[in-house]
Length: 243
Image (cartoon, rainbow, N blue to C red; front, side, top):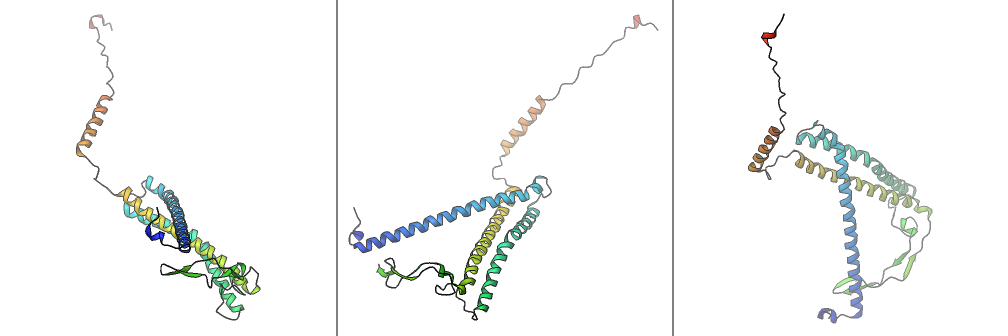
């Protein structure tokens, strides 16, 4: 049985509502997928930090919280610098390409989003959305698929700068963000390990239980004490002694 509010909707409104719900569902699926990737990255980077700091903790080279945090942070930042210099270089190269494109095009308003001559979108199909909007519960939304094609993929010499800039920018930027996320994951792991390894806690301590353990250990040691070897005493018979 349909709710009264939906019973009064027109067929057009119902189609729009179904489309909106589908888009919202897809967005939530994407958010969940990205979230699962972030969780996996955090677990992997946490294990990586364990590997970096394992030897100094196990061998007691570091035996207090302050030293561990200092050492782990140093290792963390060294790892970050090793992982991030390549994406940072790619990112900087993208902007150098953009500046050269502005110089060679004789204007500093080089439009990388242009679809006619100098932008990256010259490589894609594009449609005009004019007249594709409508009202839905007081909101202006897209209510139909556009039919007017305004661009077909074509190569433009003037857009070579955009063809280079956009991939370099996306690869360098996303790679660098991944490195930053790894840095943050290892940082969280540092604080967690510093608390779990070096913090003393009496939360689960029970005096009676500990005393019973001590008595049991003492009794076990007594029961396993090796017996003293028997010493045989040889008595000399003076009556039969003959020099």
